[in-house]
Length: 142
Image 1 (cartoon, one colour):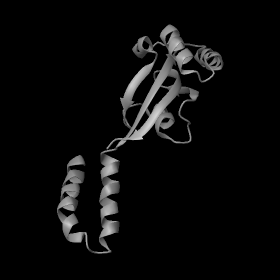
Image 2: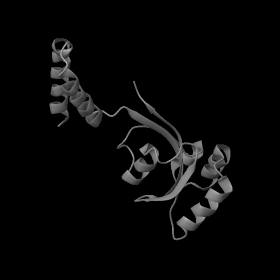
Image 3: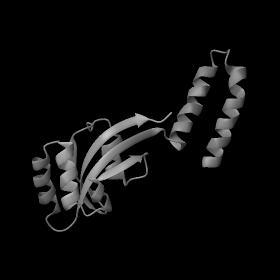
């Protein structure tokens, strides 16, 4: 599938100079640009999280969320103290990632613009447990 997309992108690039002077070329190029974004996403996000599993995980995270009150420094301290993920040692920081690298529920919070940057979201359930997620940045990679 990616090979087909790559071939289409190469063909589009080769045809671009010839099509540059026609009005009907713009919709065709938009098709190829949209196809490229689907197979080679340029969106990126940075986030931190706190992972908790166990029988009282939701209540534990709701209590932590209230204590954190959207303060990134408090979030990092709580992640170091409570998170069951190895990233807790780094304040829960996960670094930069692209769509599809995280499980779908986690991806939704990180890439859906209805979730604000700098606000603690959750608890969010995944196969690993429940998370509090702090999205610190979203951007397009050039």
